[in-house]
Image 1 (cartoon, helix red, strand yellow):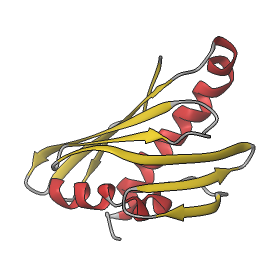
Image 2 (image 1 turned 60 degrees about the vertical axis):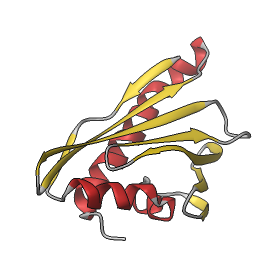
Image 3 (image 1 turned 90 degrees about the vertical axis):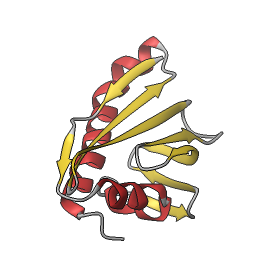
Image 4 (image 1 turned 180 degrees about the vertical axis):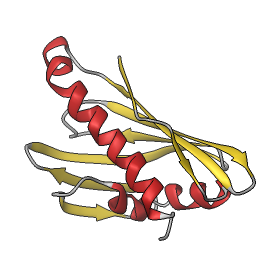
Length: 135
């Protein structure tokens, strides 16, 4: 497995509000990079296409109230992966969020995909920081 991590972002929003926003995958579209197409979602799953990347599907595999969310790739995604979202309080009004992807990449895919996947996770974190977790 290849481990890819986002930057940790500090968000001036309470932990429970951040968690509630992230557990509804209908909100995930607001965090994705520009240029997505074929967006479909419900509370527990979503799918989309990014430029030059086949359809990606995600579903919520585990929710640990207010602290952790694990998303897993759906069958048909270009490779198998999961994304762990760690949501930690700094104080009552401030939270840190960190995305970690565990991806099943062969050597060639790893060489090609690590940088774009790191950028993808950093985009999620940055857009979350800027969104204010507004649904």
